[in-house]
Image 1: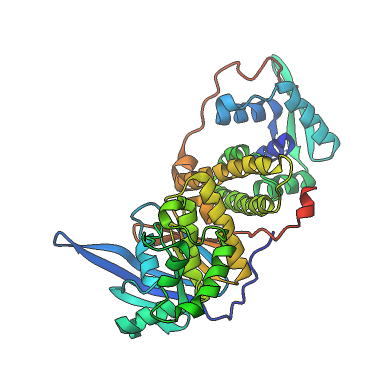
Image 2: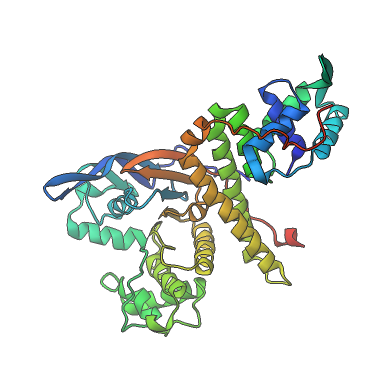
Length: 248
Length: 184
C-alpha cells in the first residue's frame, strides 16, 4: 500500500481557484459554491463527496465548462476556461474532456455503437471514429452488444456505453458525476472496477463526484463539500496492483 | 479482535487494574462486549510474560488486593501503533471505542486512518475480484467486499458525528455485570 507518487512540480490537470457560484432563487442569492479552491494532478483520481445539495454537481459542471463561475477561475489542462467563448468551450470539451453523467441519456433510436460515435460526429468522420468506438465498447465489456439499442441494455450496460462515449477521442481528463447513482449494488461494483481499470490503463486524470464513501474509495484523494465549501481534504492509501497468485 | 492490543491501548490513559479495563470496555460497548473475564485476565498474564506490561500488587482494606498494570516501553509502542492504525483493522469498533476514551483529541485522526485503511483494502479486494473466477472465490470476495464497503460507509458516518461522539459522556456500568471473576 502506498500513496500515489505524484510529482509536486507537475502542472495540475485541474485548478479551481477561489470559485463562487451564486444563483438567484426567489429574489434571493443562493451560493451553490463559495470560495472553493482545489487542484487535481495528472493521472490523479480525486473524489468529490458530500451530501445532496453540497455543490458537487455544480463544481463538476464548472470544471467541465458547462457552467461559468460567478467569481474565481477554473483552469483545465492549462486552459483558463473563462477566456473561452461558448463555441471554443464546446470544442475544448470535445477535444480534451470526457464526461460521464448519472444518467447517460442515450439516444433511443441509435445502437450502442452509434451512441458512442454520435457525440463526436461534429468533429470527426464516422469512419475515423468507428474503429476506436468498437475498441472502447469491447474494453467496457460490451463487445457483443454493440448493435443493441439502449432499451435492450441494462442500467449498468447503458452507463458503460456512456463511459465508452466519454472516452472516445482519448480525453486526458474524465469527469464522472454520480456515475453509480442509478445502479444496483452489483452494477455499481462492476462500474467501479471498470473505472479503476481504465484510469490505470489509459493514465487518465479522473474526477468523480459521489455521495457514496465506498465509491470514493477508488480515489487517491477525497475532497468533501458541505454547504458549497470544502470542509475536508485527505489522501488515501492506494492499493498496489496485486498478483492473482496471491489468491492461491 | 486483538484483545491484547485493545487492553494495551486502554493502558495508554495511565496505569489501571484489570477489572477497571474490563469495565471500561463493557460500559463503552455495552451488549456487543462479550469477552469473558477469564480471557481478559489470561491475556493480561500473557502480556506480562511478554514484557508488554508490569504489575504491582496494591493492598486494599477489607477487599482483595489489586494488581495495578502499567505499560512497558515496548507495550506503549505496540499500543500506540495499534491506535494509530498500523496493522489490519480487524475491529474498527473496538479501536474507536478505545480512542474515544484514551485519546479523544486524536479521535478524528484514528477515524481517518481507519477509513484510509478500509478504502485501500476495498480497492485491493476489488482487484482480486477481477482476477478470479474459480471455485467459490468470487462469492467469498463479494462477501468481504460488502463487509468492507459497510465499514467504509459507517466510518464516514462516524466522521460526520465525531464531535458529538467525543463529547458524549461515558455509560455507567451496571453493578455486577462484569462477570463473576474479580480482579486479582
